[in-house]
Structure formats: C-alpha cells, structure tokens
Image (cartoon, rainbow, N blue to C red):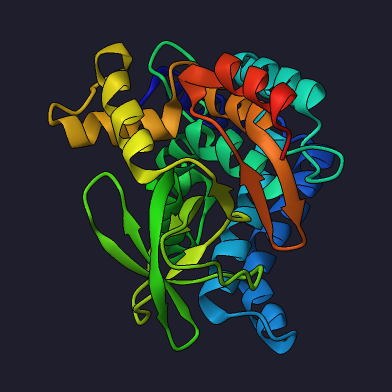
Length: 297
C-alpha cells in the first residue's frame, strides 16, 4: 500500500475509533454510501436509454470514481494531486472542440488513472483499489476500476471492420482488438488512432473506445521511430524491462505529467462531431509549426 493510501486509511481508522459520534458527519457519510451504491443501478438506466452494455459498466465505474474523488481530494494528503489537476484544468480547459482540443473524457481518465503523485507515485485509481474494503465498493465495480487503472492511451492502426466493430492493432505489440466506438466514428483502414481502449469484462468479447478517437495524420513508420527514440528518455517507478513495456509506460505517463496533453493541444488541426485530428510528432512540433505556417491544412 502506498503512503498516501495508508494515510487515508489511518484517517478512516481514527474516525471509527472516536468515542463521540459526530451525527452530522454520520448522516453525510450515510448519504455518500447511498450514492456509491446507487452506481450499481446506473447500468440499468443506461441500458434503458440504449447505451452499449459494456460501455454502461465503465460509465458506472467512472461515476463512482468521480464521487470518491470529490471526497478524497478534500483531504490534506491529496494536495499534490489537486495541484497537478487544477493547474492542468485551468490551463487546458478540457471541454472538447471548438473550446479545447482536450475532451472531458480524455482529461478525466488522465486525472484518475495516469497522474502519479506522492513519493510512492500513486494515482486516484490505485488509492481507491487499496481502500476498496473500507469504501465498501461492490466487487463487480472494483473489477471494472482495476481494469480502468491499467488502461492507457495507445496508438492503434485501423485494420478494417467486422460487423459493427472496428478492428484496431496496437503499434506496440501488434495485439488486435475488436472495438465498439460510442462516438460512432468508423474511420478508414490504415488510419492511426490515439485512443484509450477499455478491455472486455467477463461475458464480453470486445473493447470500448472510451475516449473520442484522435486521428493521427503522420505515418506508422514516423510514430514507431519516435516511440523508440523515447525509450532511453523514459523514467519511472518499477519501469518495465522489455522495450515494449517501456513504450507502453511512456504512452501512459509521458516524460512528465502533462506531456500528452501538451501534444494534443499543439498538434490539433481540426475536428468533427465524432473524431479529432492531430498532426505532428511530439518531439518535432517546432518543425510542424513552421510547416503549417507555409502550408496550412
């Protein structure tokens, strides 16, 4: 257990050991518990509204994390996380085009699962997992949260369609994923997508494109060359040894907390209702800026 999660747990234990009951706090805690358990019924409501069932399970888990995050970020020990995310929100204003190249779905996943803080480099997702017993999180929701924590943005090659699913191949390991895309974007064979895929839950065979697809304008070869250039620069706790693992860690965390946010903002060249388009390679953005001045899209 990380130091921040341990401090939060110690706070829980201290509150439980108090001889005098704070009835106002007790009622507030009861209300929050009811809200947490209410997430179990969100799936049913989303299904009635026509949502894809796997997507509905992930939405319910994200809603629960949002409720928990509101509570946890009130604690002094969470100040490092609050500082990183608040500064990024003020700087990037992540509301999607035309206001920002960053979508809310991208930003929330980044904040919950990719932002590392504290000496033990924890995340909101990892803290919630370690505190799941004390937070009385339903086991099915906990499983979903665990999968979300392990998710990352990735670069995938569009390899065609199979009925209603898009076939995407991961550039890092050639793994093929059959995906449901909630935005409805179908794309074209050969495109590169920068997107966060959530894996199948038990009983499902497909992935969910949980963020609006970012369509990359540069070639597969350019991106592969770039990712391998980044291997010696990538640092982190318990960094995987194989090159593929390092690249996957880099795609999740970048060289610093807002690395990929910076790229999205600087690489933005346009959008439509269900997809966003990015140009350039992150370590060559100055050259792109000059090119765009001379030959705008």
